[in-house]
Length: 426
Image 1 (tube, rainbow, N blue to C red):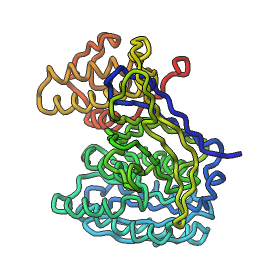
Image 2 (image 1 turned 180 degrees about the horizontal axis):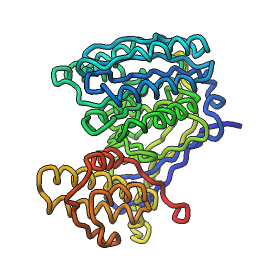
Image 3 (image 1 turned 120 degrees about the vertical axis):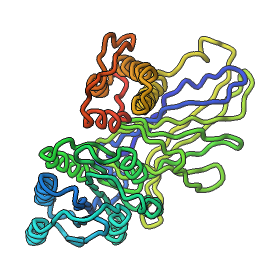
């Protein structure tokens, strides 16, 4: 039978007086998520395209082609809409079924899109929210493409609009070229449970759009939450998704009742697997004490009715046996290292931008070693584009004097993508 499966990996043994409990929870969908939840699987895809003046030329031509191809590939039972964004937002195509006639009308309208004006992303999101709000039970997936920075005067409105959109739809953000701001798009995608990536050249746009569409179509069920119960007096220090990407969910906790909070996880699809890292501070115990430090569940909500999909327990056992209490679970150690890898890259890039080459060299060297030790070859490859690696096992590097801006942005953008612990070490 198709179902969600949850497993917890940890070393439950703590030395006397210790309070911090760490655990990795792996959640896997075995088969299709819709069959496990009774979800409808209905899909609404929203395309939000920057049409400001800076998009004129090759970028807007490529965007029109990529959007047209994406709409052509939509199955007939999906729905879609298209928004052209500048300092305002134009609903080029309102929400319609992906029928042959509607697709033809959309392709004709997309060909008329022109690039002119500024960039006020809050208006784009507001227009998208108005469309997604009409389909509360659907898989609600947006794709936002831009090539520049949001106007400064729009920032307060954008902040408010992100709060309004949170939980209403998910959003994949893509920046084309090298004139957009990584932190700005990551703020949007993180709050809307999506990802941010760079499209270095316009001609790469179509393939990226196609990949985003395929992943959206593989989703079966939306609005799944990760529920955590903790005992009286405990404190959740953090809850993070750590695979396939690091996403800090800690501040997204929504109280359900005393000692119980929900963290959003968004939509799930066929044969999907994710890992989450919990760090819980509990009351210290004496040798021999045992306690339930946390109980986790996946909860699907539809029309106000909750369905529990899977659950697992996080334990704490106090011991005076150092051979037990000093052992770190391999999965916890692996993802702690992946988090340090991402942090080293970000801080190293920041130091380089400030002109602190000594600190940048040390931090990026540390990142090279962590990437090597964990087998994260994708990140190691990105690092080799910004540093000369002399010894990856020791993290000995030299900063490159000439680095393409797109390569630096790719490293910064993808630094939070993780690799799973190798099966041989599992």
